[in-house]
Image (cartoon, rainbow, N blue to C red; front, side, top):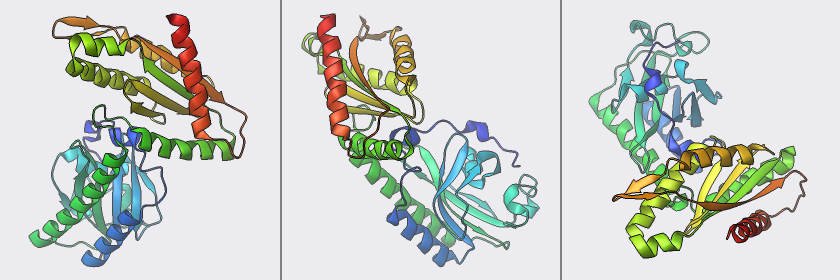
Length: 318
């Protein structure tokens, strides 16, 4: 076990918002990890995402292993160090690493080098790393080369985020939400696992824009998005479909929707002060709970049903 300051790692929005680790292999990452292994002639090269507890090889050449707990992950240690790069020439010569899992048989890793990559918000979400079974020196030019390759990993990540991201709230946009939700629906259909969809619309939001200006409205939208994220689980999908319309998909649950809304209401009860004005956001929500699965069940139809339930609640509250 590695003795390190792993508790410096904080929850990363990439897993909550884009779930790249849980999606299918990405040829762009696969090509980069294969190229990296070839350039440095090492046993293993990997694109590794580091979450709160687990380090996951999104793409790896030279190992079939998919995950490591962070207390055994050299990449987690590299991220927690705060350094722009992390090189260990010989694990057996370092007190912190000589008894770690990777240094022991049958792994017998001796050398590690990792360079963190960043997302569009500047978060270090993982590393492009290389590992070898023999100690080795790592030249300054080799470190430059690995840094350049890690930069490319970050650019792929940023392109993916930009395509699926709502720039104002940092939630999934419509495209991102539909893409990931269709995958969740397909998985739930195969496994017969229940899921819930909550359609949310802010009440009287137009009046905020008219009376206080769009800048204040944008602040409230960002604030509401933050409360949605804090109320959700890591596995939930949270999106902004446009304007003041939001949606949440809660996989593998029948009753979590009421718990989620309870957490959200508790968060919102505190209110927010903007330019001396106190705001308490009110919303209407409609929920669809899916327990009887059909092979041709449409996500769009489920969203329409959730919208209809939401509008009924909005009408009844007026």
